[in-house]
Every structure is written in structure tokens, then in C-alpha cells.
Length: 268
Ligand SMILES: Nc1ncnc2c1ncn2[C@@H]1O[C@H](COP(=O)(O)OP(=O)(O)OP(=O)(O)O)[C@@H](O)[C@H]1O
Ligand SMILES: [Mg+2]
Image (tube, rainbow, N blue to C red; front, side):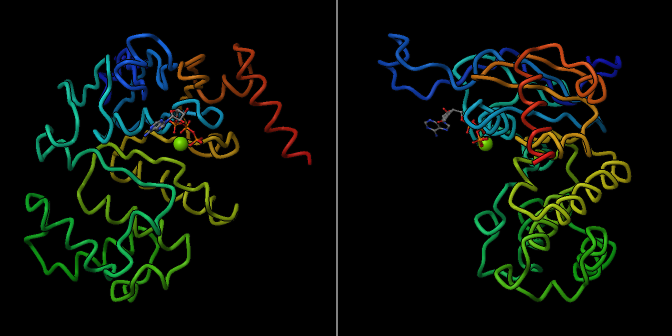
């Protein structure tokens, strides 16, 4: 259940990830990168996970999408326990999509935008358009993410960072996901482009009923997008709160330190 009493779409329970060798793990030589994290995301809710570099945010995100196995704990999607991506049903693989920080690394530079999206539909035929041509559907998708239809014929190296990130979002949306996991998805962009992408995500969430797990180290970004915020430090969640409450009345000293650091940056 989520804080608002809705059944959760995503439930992470007592997740533990340790990157040590078996020997290091047995002897407790390496600290857990993720150390007993539990969180939930409701349908059409945006949960931001914040924390300093190395606190375990990406590792949690990778467990959620199935790119990383955990030593302990469970990930449940829509009430069903899910494991590494190879063990997931096609429906779950499709329903949980990730948007990465670096589109240059996550989008094939040799493929046109059209090919990137059609490849997604070839992998997941169940959501490929059948009522019209794929080109018409791609045009609509690109419009939905604020891109001209002409972009379909281009390759990503000729696009700006913001345009690439819109293409990443379009590819994810092509699969009609229910949960979007964004790992530092706007961190590499200029502040004005960041705001445009955040506004796009907020509007897509509403129009498509998406849930979003939004990983970021930037509290300014959190303010623009999150309903709730989970704060991580050294692999643990130290505080989870509604976004407004967290900014008004942080309860954990580490959260206060993060907020003070963000204010210092704003004032600088
Ligand atoms: N594949 C890996 N192998 C070994 N150690 C790893 C691996 N991935 C992450 N770690 C370690 O796990 C810890 C958590 O890393 P993680 O990338 O999850 O942090 P993060 O909060 O996403 O940091 P950042 O803000 O820099 O992206 C760090 O100590 C990191 O060095
Ligand atoms: Mg990270």
C-alpha cells in the first residue's frame, strides 16, 4: 500500500545489494551498496530518490528494472514478485521502462529515430500499432514529446542533448509503460532544457497515467517533479516524505544537510 492507501504499483522490500566477492561478503569486508531499502510507488505517483554520489540510487533503480540482482529483498510490480530482466515476462519487461542519464550511450548512434522506435515495437509486438501505419504512429509519438516529425529520419548524434532525451522518452512511451524509471535523466542538460523535460514528464504522467521513479542528486529538480521523496545515505533510506513536507520540515539531519547544500548552491 502507498501512503495514500492505493495499492502500490511498485513495492521494493528490504533490498540488499553488495558488490563484494563471495569471500568479501562472507567476511563482511565490503559495505552493502544498498542496505535494506524499502519503498513503494503508487500508480500515477512520482517518487524521487535523492542522495549524494555513491549512496546507492542507481543500484536501486537497476534492481527495479531487473539489470541488477539483489542478495536479499524483493521487488514486486503490480503485486507480482519480479527478478532479473531475463526472468521477467515480456509484459513486465515492457511495462517498466528506463530513461538513462546519457542518451548518447543508451541510443544506438547508427540508427535513425524511426528505427529506434520500430525496433521497440518489433520486440514487443503486443503494443505495436495495428490500426494505422507505424510512420503515422511515430509522428504522433514524436509530437507527444515535443519533437517535429522530421526528426524520425535523423540519427541521434545530429540531435541536441534535450532532443535525444525526448527521443529516449518517446522510445519508452512507444511501449506503453506503466512505470518509468529515470536515472539522472536531466542531469546532463542545461537548466532551461532540464525544466522543459521535467514539464514534459509531468504532463505525460498525467495524460498517460504513468508512475515515475525519479533518481536524482539535485533537489531543485525534485521540487519540480516529485510527489514524495526518499532520501538515501550510504545505501539506506534515511527519510521518506511528501515533497512539500520534506522541503518545509526535513526531519533527518542528513536531509537538512542536503537542503542546506542546495540552498548554498542557489545563493552562490
Ligand atoms: N557494478 C558495480 N560494481 C562494484 N561496485 C559498484 C557497482 N555499481 C555501483 N557500485 C558501488 O555501489 C555504491 C552505490 O553506487 P550507485 O551507483 O548506486 O550510487 P549513486 O547513488 O547512483 O551515485 P551517483 O549519484 O554518483 O550516480 C558505490 O559505492 C559504487 O561504487
Ligand atoms: Mg547513479
